[in-house]
Image: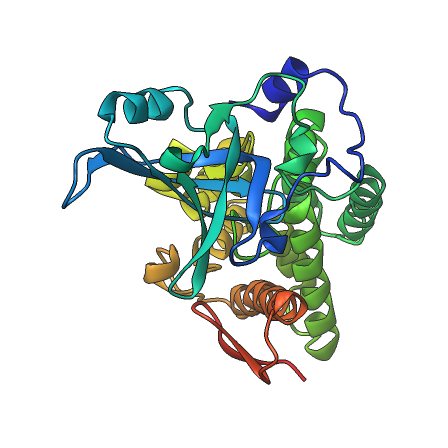
Length: 340
């Protein structure tokens, strides 16, 4: 369900009081009691216990600070567990009472129906969408739009400018683009994140062009601004950031290149070919979604600029959120990060 539908379904959001403030996933600790709303990302069908009668089920919930697994432990009455499971759907906001437990290196919320814990679908007005989907403030997004447009105005090649205008002079596309997330989880995973990430990639490319003036600066800047346009289709925003069906089956690299070709049929064929290559190669390896490896010096710079911004963001975020007294934190995508 779209963000607009959720927003329209609610009464105007009221600022939470200090006594009734929503419990954030990032603040939950082992053995803490939970009594708060969360957005449902997905749920798995009920399964029988191995050694006793009854059913249990698992689900994944999220809010603006992160996501975690929830386990509902049903009683011997399997029908009650089925009723609880069927009372809500993916994308709904549910109110959960339960207890935080440790499962390996991760925290989970356990709902014990036999001890009075509950789960129920929230009614309109019980929550604000801002509690579940992280977003840059409007003033920051508008500031980023101004910077983005300033970068566009530095392009001198008229054929390349036609391409940029085909996308970014279109108000409906720009509205989507400026509020799109940069990712679902790893980097810039918030509304407005795609625009912010795109500006960073372009700035890195501009800096490199000053070191290597023989690079085609206009091609590189335009490629940086266009490299992730497919993410406006790849991601959907409701009560959480999710991958669309088209995004899952095709990916933003292929989607973005197709968008370029569809909007830019009447420009110089070589310009279009080079920009197509930039989009198709900006993840470099096939295992990361790129059908081609970079074959232009400009496309190689864009790949490294894109990866640089994503990795820098991830490592800084790991340092910021690390909950340890150790000198290092470990992340499955990055590895070890030194914290001192």
